[in-house]
Image 1: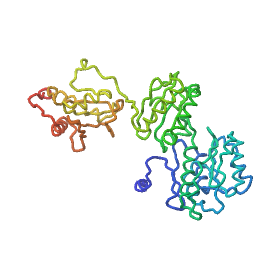
Image 2 (image 1 turned 30 degrees about the horizontal axis):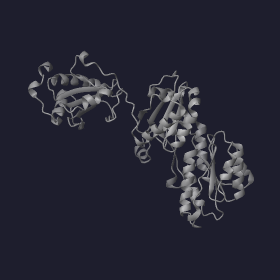
Image 3 (image 1 turned 45 degrees about the vertical axis):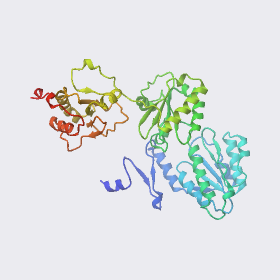
Image 4 (image 1 turned 90 degrees about the vertical axis):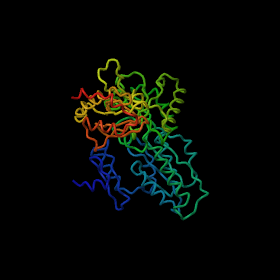
Amino acid sequence: MQVALADEYEVDGYPTVYWFGSSSASKRLFPVRGNHKAAQIVAWVRRQLRPPSVKLRAAADAARVGQKISSGAPQLIVWLPTDRWLLPPLMRAAANVSERVDVSYTFDAQLYTDALRHALANNGGSAQLAAEAAPQPPAGFIVVAHDERVRLMEPLNLQAVATGSGDSEVGVALEAALVELVNASWLPDVLPFTEEYEDILLDGDVPLQLVLIGSPQVLASHVDELRAVARMHRGHVLVVYADATSHDSDGLKEYFGVDADIEEARFFGLDVRKEIRYATDPQLPYMKSDARLAAFDAFLWKLRQGSAPRIITSEVAPIVSNSHSPLHIVVGNTFDEIVLSTTSDVLLHVYASWCGHCKKLEPYFELLAKRYAGVPTVTIAKMDGTINEVPTLDVDGFPTVMLFTASNRQIEAGADVEMNLEGLAQFLESHAELPIDTSQLNIKDEL
């Protein structure tokens, strides 16, 4: 009922849950997809009630943030100079990442060292990391429940320090470095296609994905390669694994045309934002590990550049000699050949088998095809838009009627076009580029 209010706050689905803080900039949207259980909503609300970052005050705090993480939010611990001038940029960074991690800070060198020591001891971290830790603030590390588990923030160049100014180059660099550390670390290198990560995979900040579908045994045989390639393209591509034996992946298997009982690995590229699927080298499952890793890397660079080969869904092209109708049937694989021909103007009806309006149009297109059957400069055609993909064709709904001229202009029949025999004929003839020999029209069969 509150349409204007829904438009103002960009509500485009239900349920939608917003959190409104004390300032207009603090509005936050709860990621409903995959997170609609009561416990998850309560945890999210509690997170909104907390400050973006809390101060470590005692040895017990250092031990707490450095404990073993088996699940839940990662921990980000930051060591700041004692004069506090970098606290504002820390708080800005914490506000940006508070949905993903719990952030703590300290001005005390000993507390920071103790927290790092506990984190390494409890999470299987390398002792070498302690030696690599920055000897002076600002510094930080993150503790996660996967992969390397403990990661250090990249050291900052302190030559630009301007004491007392949180907007100095170091302040800006600290904010960026902390956000980058969280974004690069809070997710596993290889993500399972499960409800837990559904919102990230389908609506997250990174739309490009490398998808592996196979059994758990298949994943185990490829996990090292997948982690390696994920780190090569971290922040640009998500590497996703779907268990072919699980019902969680049923929709994904159907989307890529994969059976549940497949024996070998199947790899695909995906742009979830554009809803485009990409094909990988079919020999990938059979390559040696080094060659496969190089092939993964090359494919993901093409995916990022938009040059990876697309997967086009298409019906099998009909045999022309078996057709008793002058109405051309177009499929995905014959679209360019028939519709983009430069020797004729093509009137195309894009339909769906379940569409009632499309069924009402079909007799008119049959009659149009008969009328113009003897005119070599005109082609009347139809295509099922639900099972044939054409990258260059943008169809918002069914039916869609478009004229493709000989110079490949696309003209869609709008609301002003009468969707009957004469209305469609007038639309065709008023926009056609090639001459139409009216002496060749077959009108008598329409009487």
